[in-house]
Length: 187
Image (cartoon, rainbow, N blue to C red; front, side, top):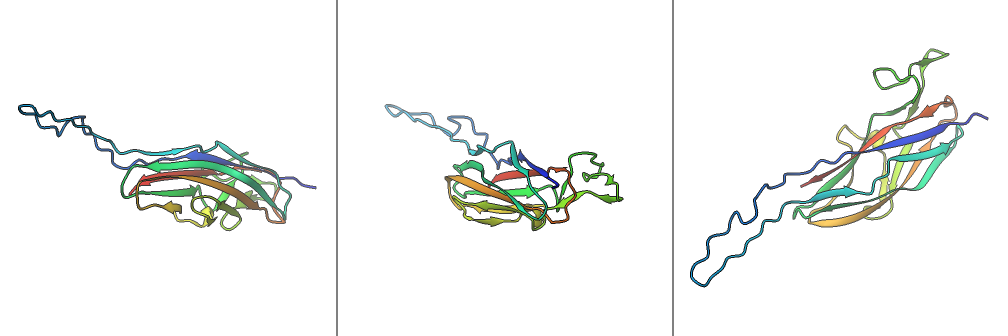
């Protein structure tokens, strides 16, 4: 029986919105007489914490689906009154094999002369089970990624994801990886 080792690498990509560089007390007018003015500047904050470095599907036989329950658990937060957009983007519509990668990011040819590539267009799914329940297909997404959640006010939300990878019955034995980028941006 041919076994297939699948590993998906997670890369944290955080894009921070505009942060006001306002020095403390910048707008404080001098007090007069018995009056004292107290002032403070509060900068914008946007954070994405808790992502893991690796999601390992282990050995997945051709024609079956590998799953990782609780693959990711993380928190997105902002004090921006307009909220944030949280997206995930895969590196492309295929998972390039990890051995013999060419400059284009895909494997070199194997014995039969064809590239050893594991598709992810519809075969890789991420199911968000907490703050924004739903199923995502990051391999189907445009270069801007697939939206996990868009909020409209300051908030802190926890996310939990289950990942699944359906391996075609005719998939070549090899070890495959793909990089996914999470992006958190203030609105």
